Amino acid sequence: MLDYTEREKDFRLRVILPADLQLQNARLECSWQLKKVLQGYLHIVKQRLQHSPNLSSFMMELKTILDAALKNTNSIEASPAPQYYSCLVKDIENLGWDKLLFVDNEFSTIRLKIEDSSGREHVVVVRLGARYPYKAPDCCVDLPVAFSISWTPQSNIQDIYNQVLSALESLKGFWDTLDEIDTKTWVLEPEKPTRSATMRRIAIGYFTLAGNNVSVTIDVDPRHPTMLPDCYFLGADHVVQPLKDKLNSNVHLWDPDVGLLQNLKDMLETDFPSRSDFKKSDFTMDCGICYAYRLESSIPDQVCDDPHCAQPYHQACLYEWLKGLPSSRQSFNIIYGECPYCTKPITLKLHNKPF
Image (cartoon, rainbow, N blue to C red; front, side, top):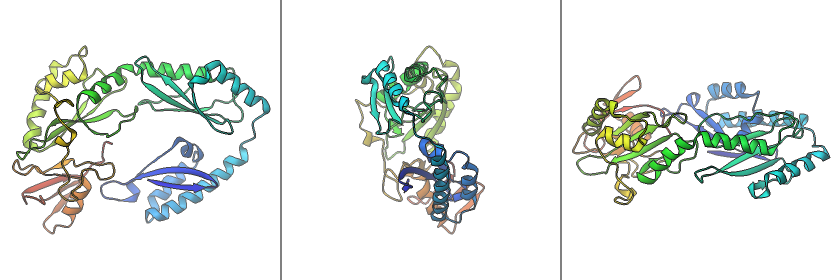
């Protein structure tokens, strides 16, 4: 995570490196404010990401690009007309001041709170231009699907509120499904899921010396939350394979009229450890290389397949370990080597993390 100030503006940018740490294969995540400033410059940013020799050099070039983008942005932005403020205040009064969470000193950015029919609170960030209401404002809300507002010169803040509320209600079933999972199971990842997160990694078995630790990552379709989600099992092969077999043989049992969690229990023929019977520490085992559970945003998701070992590792830690072994070898995206704990054969398939 990188924070820096450019032309008296603060921006936050996240550079996500792949397992091989190659900059040209990195992904960039940034706030909508930064993304808006860099509109029209994204092809240059991608080009420099491909050709910069290191991260430090890329950041210097990015700051130069950003400085030029801000100059152009500032040169075309005009000051709001006096009626801009009176129009905006009137719109907020009609909506209700109780729905306003924040407004900046220039009245250019406001935050609205919206409560859906299930009592979940959501925040909408609205960035208004000097030509409001003749030009549509930017609207940002934490949703798992794309969202854009419909706007005419006659539109106002109330229209934004209503359109967002309609979008929230269309996702009620999706959030109801994930809220049940969050409250009734132990979710290992993400640690603090946002409303846009569609994935959950759920503990199935707890860590024991017999290597019975296993979890499943599900990816729920926001538009069709009652359908069978994509499922990825994580754990030693001797524990994971029986679960895969049950999932495949019981797929006909899936019932859209039954909740997702109950469907998973029926198909896997197992129960998920509940929050009332287990502590999270029952499912968290430190990496056998760095001796930590969380490495930045990652948790140990690589497990030795030997039933008597089943030691978990972070993908990055195991990658560095295996790279340093003279006896290890790599074929495409799979590295073969020895487990640091038991020296039995272990394989690492390089992949991008789901969270």
